[in-house]
Amino acid sequence: MLSALIFDVDGTLADTEHAHLAAFNAAFAAEGLGWRWDVRLYTELLTVSGGKERIRHYWQQVNGDVRDIDGTALDALIDHLHTVKTAAYEQAVRDGAVRLRPGVLELLEQARREGLTLAIATTTSPVNIAALLRTAIGPDWSSYFAVIEDASTAPLKKPHPQVYRQTLQRLGLPAAQCLAFEDSANGLQSALGAGLATIVTPNDFTAHHDLTGALRVLPSLAGVSVAQLRDWHAQARA
Ligand code: XBP
Ligand code: MG
Figure: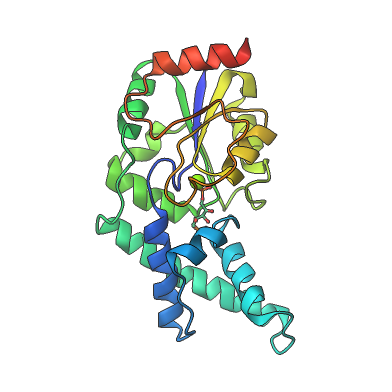
């Protein structure tokens, strides 16, 4: 029996990564770092989940094993850059830079009407979720989701299954009664690690990822009904 749908945010609910990329570059420019990530490089960097982790990974790429900055100074730089980036992203989303992907809002509404529980399991920051969904759904957006697990509650980032395990624990549901929705290999591995059948809707940044293990790989959620999800879920359980 299907009881709950658990959604990833970035790349799944909305194609957000171009706006994230612009926000990272705005932060780097504001700090005069001379860094500028292009789409090709960012596509590679997206294999590291979490904005702070991604900045640290890039720092180590460009600085090798530099010893001229001690750990706390680097941590402070990364935290500051990420704070500036998050503010830039939030402003871009408020200005309408991001739309929900096709079929997402319809599916959320239909799932609510049919009494399915909805949840979010993401590695992004809580302010980013609020900015995106307040703009896309409206001020009552948080009433749509029974559980929200994000970077502030699940510090171990995808592909680690922590965020999905904590979502299931708070839902009080077994993985067998739920479906996960993802866009990337990291996200798929995280959901599979928590025992969840997972539907993947890749995007430009993740189309080349290895999505072996997905219950379905779809171009988008356009036209996907709750009845269709129940069928796929029953097949997965069979
Ligand atoms: C995708 C991520 C996030 C975003 C940037 O999250 O890995 O890091 O790229 O957001 P999701 P932050 O699990 O929703 O696909 O800078 O807030 O991390
Ligand atoms: Mg994602």
